[in-house]
Image (cartoon, rainbow, N blue to C red; front, side, top):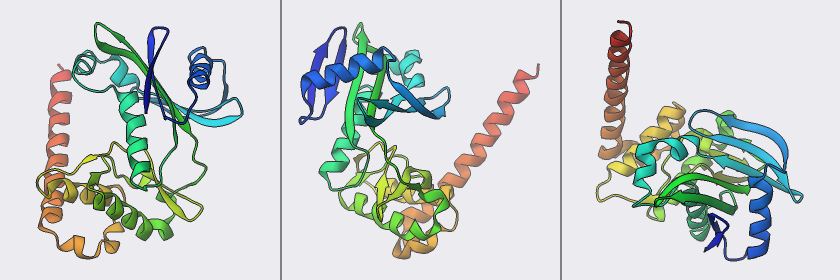
Amino acid sequence: MKNIKYKEWRLLIPDQLDDEMAKSLFDTVQSGNFTLRSILKDTYRSQVKRISVFDKDLVLKIPNEKNTRTWIRFLTWFRTGEAFKNLKGMQLLQENGILTSTPVVAAEKRSLGMVVDSWLIYEFLDGQSCVDLPSSHQAVVSALNYLHGKKLLHGDPQIRNFIQRDQGIYTIDSNPKKLGLTGFDLGYEWAYLRKSYPGIERFYGKINESKWYRFAVQFDLIDRKLARFRKKIRAFFKSF
């Protein structure tokens, strides 16, 4: 991927994208001079829009929380910003033969070495969410198994982060990273997928027999109980 400086921003783009086209895409998106097709998500954490730019069907993602929280800004002194990380993640998956969104441009603006604003665009995937497609669940398990076989973790393997398109399973909203030193990371990914769609574990096969998987399931249950307890404590003190 190429990292180019443009105006007060840094742009990260795939090698095959022309620099001038990348700058034109940046100018159009940054100025808001695009066609809004729909709002896919709008929360304090992120804003995701389906847009059209130069007849391209794209997704614009703005990581609101990562752009504004002071502590997260501080951490970008030492590590990659969210938009760049997302685009690099898509590229990494593609390089490993994993079906995913096609990256286009990520843009970030830094002040005093910290990311203070960022966004990214990638091609829109016109597929069907596997949440409402039980017939795809065995293929989802196979897709996650394949990703793990490449020594990578998904990062957020909820069932909604898999899409079926043209009979293939696409991995989306992933934050791929290398496997940890123990089997806990793998076990936790399977436990997390199970939590997002109870019953999918019937396709797990030998994974159900894994000690790390069974440990991760129990760990997750305890962690959720602790989270509910912490929430009640915070609500109690706020009542005064």
